[in-house]
Length: 553
Image (cartoon, rainbow, N blue to C red; front, side, top):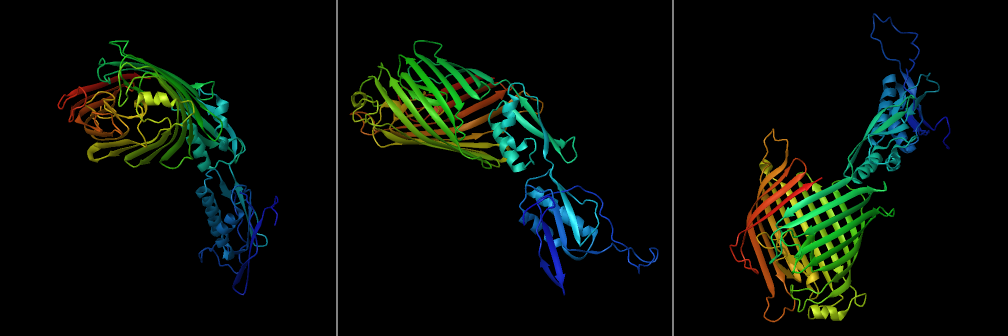
């Protein structure tokens, strides 16, 4: 039967104690009012002598008006058990409450079901659904983000919509993940029109400008001790969430040793929720270095220009993951010293490709993250086999290798925490030094210089026990302050090593550290480590202290 303004029907008939369903329901809701009582029995006793009995009546039909969001069959299934002979006002109210509960369970908390004022005619009772559609969407508090774009990003709360909370929550989560500088919270209240809902989005935002200044002691071997790094980033260019950043790194004790610049531009593509990152890195040095740039270790002196297309997958509870497609063009200059298994520090230029996966899984008291990537180049596509051969014997231009990393942080008893990490690389052929796996330094094996050794294949593991938060109750300026004890290990394999050179390297170190975050903006760490294997100028027992101090805003 087609739906009309009167609604669909549910009819319940009975004959000789047999009940037969012959009706349907309309998808609508109504306005609460009083249900008129049935007429009194002609043989009723005086109220003073007998207990008053609620009037009974046959309830054979429910007409449900006002529904536009639930399946009619679900409404039919919900009210069907309340049909039959000898029913009372209480039975009608139970049907009303059951139907309202179904709306709640299906994510429609603004919907109410009412019993309009009516007479019971032909054993039929009407229920009215009031859906609480959005009358007005108001946005307040936004200073740095355009209101129209906020409104467009949460269409589930547009005027005229019935708020479906699972959809609202999904859109709100995506909206808040767009920028760490903005938090949007909805407030629901009754609208000016009866049966309508007004929604206000409270926006708490900060200027999307960030920067940092850092000094650390993460130096490669045979270079001066300190590094100075400055960075600046703006995250909402053109009101379109484009992000631009610049970073500059230098060795302040000797500017000729190391000078690194990098720039990044990230923008949403508008296609399949993907983002595109464009970047460039320039490295000038007169030493053999392995430089850390934005968490990426770069071996060599020269330029890198690249792009990454990042596709996040659908949000799942406690799980986030994404796929990355990457392209780089790498051009490394004539070096002054040999690195890894290189035979000569000659120039080399080549394209590089990457397919990567990243994911994280949050559990109660634990966080696990993992990443994996396939890195490769294509023979004849902008690379010169002779340049590779000059760099390292039998190193092909069509190289390929896999990388992977795994991190796990778990809360223990008394606020202790255990942090574990592992990373590795597996190559099918010898690699030039710029593509080899590096080991050594605070992010790898503590107790050694940054990029102490290189290998074609490698494994790096670390285990760290962190103390409870060292904070008194009145120390509001302390955001994080913990001691740690750690042990790091790495093993590197060399494929087809040069004559009189090792086929593998081992690095291991253990020590203690202190990590702090104070006044929200100051971050620092200091770590003492004891190396267990001799590598380069580092001998067994040559204790090393690494440090890092940064101001971030």
